[in-house]
Amino acid sequence: MEELKITDENFKQEVLNSSIPVLVDFWAPWCMPCFMVAPVVEEIAKEYEGILKVCKVNVDQAPGTAQEYRIMGIPTLGIFKAGNIVDTIVGAVPKSEIEKKLKLYV
Image 1 (spheres, rainbow, N blue to C red):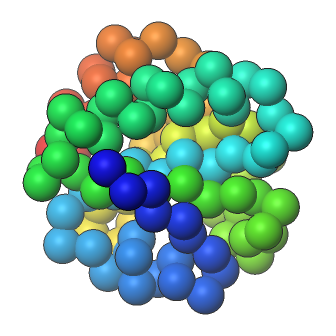
Image 2 (spheres, rainbow, N blue to C red):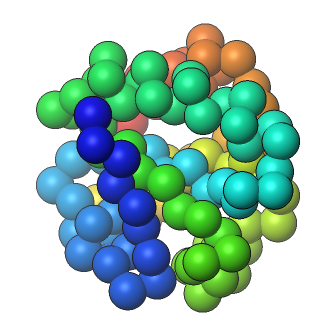
C-alpha cells in the first residue's frame, strides 16, 4: 500500500471530499509513540482497503490542519466521514480499540 501524505493543501481533496470514511494518523517524526502505532495503522490500511482510506498527516508539515482539528497530542487518529471528523483516538492504543471505533463508521 502506498502511503498517502496529506498536507494543508490537499487535505480537503483527499480527506474531506473522500467518498469513503478516512482514518487520518496525525503524527510527527520526533514522536516515539507515533512509531509504535504506525505498524497497526498500516495493518488496518491493508485489511480495510476499499472501504476505508488511510492517510498520514505530519503535524510539523501541516500545522494549519493540525490546528483546525485541535490536535493537541500525538499520535491522534481522526476518523472522518462525509467531510466531518466523527471520532478521535489519542495515544498509542491496541489495534482492537481502533477497530472497535472504526466498525461504527465503515
